[in-house]
Image (tube, rainbow, N blue to C red; front, side, top):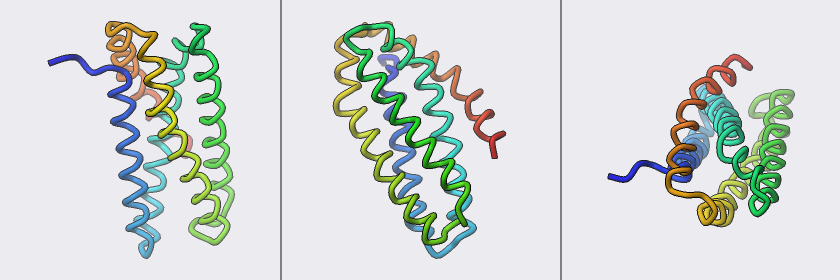
Length: 154
């Protein structure tokens, strides 16, 4: 069996994030469950973004043909981070929180769709299979530390 590439690993995380959004939608009438799921999402997305930037994006930034895509995605990560910070300052599950959360969800889903449909295929053309496997291993090594860091931010 072929080793997982960085793109496979990132897509797995994206799928898990989509599932968390679905669970949050289902938890609408259970604020405690919603809060727990949202915190899980916040930690997971924060760790994912940091590990992704330290692995794939760092590699892409060093390559002129991929630099612009990486810079664009880093700026979108910052935008999502700003949404998460704004949500912390709002009354959980209130009207403003729900509106901001909906905006963040829309932006995040756009971001991961853009990565999967445009950026990953472009990067795959430039990276060797060995580089993709090495980046996947590096991502798997970095993400647990990033999860710990994101959990500590609570």
